[in-house]
Length: 507
Image 1 (cartoon, rainbow, N blue to C red):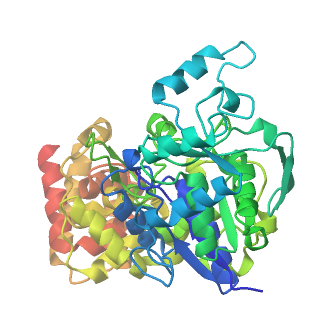
Image 2 (cartoon, rainbow, N blue to C red; image 1 turned 180 degrees about the vertical axis):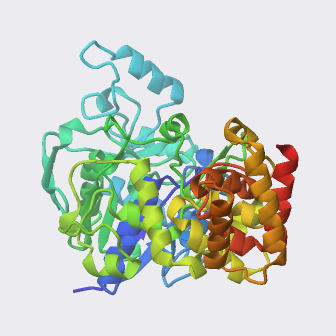
């Protein structure tokens, strides 16, 4: 059996949707499990939709996810170039070969003539007429023109496209690795353009030619490409390559949270969650769409949650490392039906991965988030202790700032309104005494602080529970955070006393 070679072939037209990253992941897992190669090929033949910066964004995303290809425009490889725009000269010969063998034809119709066709043949039963077996005979192409007329038009450089000539009423079948046997009637498919007037191939021709030339053995793509499958299968046959055609798998869609339709960027905007892997700024509008990375997801969690959208290993296990995914992945366990996206579940994955990572491993990422919020941290040991204390309350990386900034900077506001209703002179005197006691103390460990606090409360005939909320608000500014004595022990004697004094002045 030949070496497994799979490819991801994105168009550089914008941000990388999580569905695209999942396609990358399934390709990657399959290739690595089989000891094969994972290729990224940039399909940039539609120059009208090309977006500056989109290709670099795709590779940055794959790098963040840890899903780097073996071959690509960036990584090189034996089948370069890996951008279709740089392979333009490859395609015409195959399109012309199809014409010569009667499987395709030249079409000289202008844009106006195509529009007239759509209007002229529109009926209630057929509101969107297509260029197909029933209408090709009424159009301006090498099937309706004489050979001499066709030669003259070509010699004069008349703009034209090359279209596949779909056969009438034939059945095209193939075995999908996920869906089993799939069949199409060719009469239901129009004569797709294979080569455009500018000499660039369409996706239909380019994907077949490049998969053949790059020796691709398995082609995994979204189920939205299923209707194109009969065209591609016929092209493999018509070009004489049927025995080398890759095995196909059409992946299920990632659905909106309610299950009604494919998840889109608009859904993310509407419901307040990311659908792109990383921040994407559209150079035309300068509008930035937030990504999972910037929202505070770990790459391991993002990859893990994507794997579980439409696949499982047959057990209840949900947390997998990339090496475990490579070991257990199989196309047979990819679901046929779409997978509903659940943002709360996605956050659960991130929380689990933050616990799994451990405090010391989170230090670089958490330090970066603090820096983005204007707090520079130079004490990694202190930060590790803070992460350990607050991690149970954190789901995303920015939560560490909300839950732990007071360890490094005093709270900017103090919620005195939460204290005032039950505040009295007796409590005021308690905290004044506490300051004096702690100023004289040589001990500053959690156990010692709690012991002295409670003993002083008992001496003043106060319940420790009535004093804990004011103490917490003095230290952190509000009703949140880990144990108050843990906080005091970490911020130190001087800072603890200073914060008590500041709140007493406000009260």
